[in-house]
Image 1 (tube, one colour):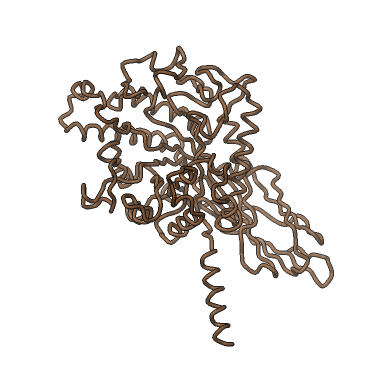
Image 2 (cartoon, helix red, strand yellow):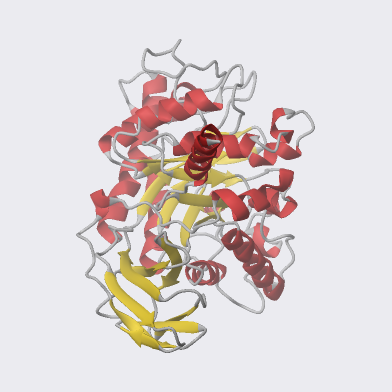
Length: 505
């Protein structure tokens, strides 16, 4: 009997450890707008439908436990916001340069809806793609490719900014400056498209640009230097205009193979960031030019060439003190040839592995549409298990000016069924506060858990349902600033006698 009890205790302990969730964890989802992959659903100019569809997506991801939306706002030198630099996106209205009618600002709307749900908004920009399809894309008369055709190169069916053109680099940097000066985005996010992926038998047509540069570098090194230049320029803009705004890059899964460099990963990738896309991600991390990296580990655990577990370990060891959020390719569950992604345990096992790595702080999922389809019931897995408890967004102390002060908070009232907490938020005095966190511990639930994450606003009140079996309930309220640094807690509690009258302390 004793042996069985001991085995039960071990089982319960193991289960608790498996189910344990980190207090801080980045949980993001990509919302792609190019080709209307995720949003808007169609290119019809219907603002009310666009708003309703975005709200539906935001609510879905909030239910799934996400705390970050990474939204593509500039897919091809066009904009999902009013801009003096670039025309309205064709993926928004159906015709490039055509404003929403009735007019609204989609970017401000999306930021507001995201923030009111206690989530961060990361503005996803494609740095160099200028025309998505030269044979079919809508091109406005004032598009930058028409104003400065000399800045652009055609490769395949697309048109790209020439990364070696200094004026083109300055223009893209100005786009970023314009966004962060006018909008309270939490981060600028760029994906893996720097120099384009190679087209078999075709060389990227930048030979003239290379010769005109006068550079003494070998051509490949010159290309990498061009990518370095725009990253450093954007880094400087963010630090000068919005120091708390982070800069993230989502590269292809492999920096370099070990066969190419002794510090490379145990992989056999046919394409690498360094050698083919000319993006030296490790240099950017080492120099502190970026704040987080999200490698696209879209293949499964045990893959014969790019194994999830091997690349997870490699990126964790090469973070250089910055954050690593893993990109999960859950869309692959919808592909007929992705047998292992049909396994309902593939995603849960990936989450378990990354949580075991102390140098990895979370996940981003590609893409939003996959959650609408709920492949393998993963929405349910996240809601009921892996993301059941809310998580704070990991802090970036290298950007912080110090932790915020404890909030002025208290319990306004308590009756037999509920307690109402009140937080005194001054919009001017507490302008650096992003949200407040309420922790709770009662007699029934003896663990201290996050009960609520409340976006900062004036007249902030939160009502909690009380368990009739509780005799004492403790609350702790903290403030979190723009760099996700958390204050010391303000503790409050209520107690009641055998009757139903609560005493507020």
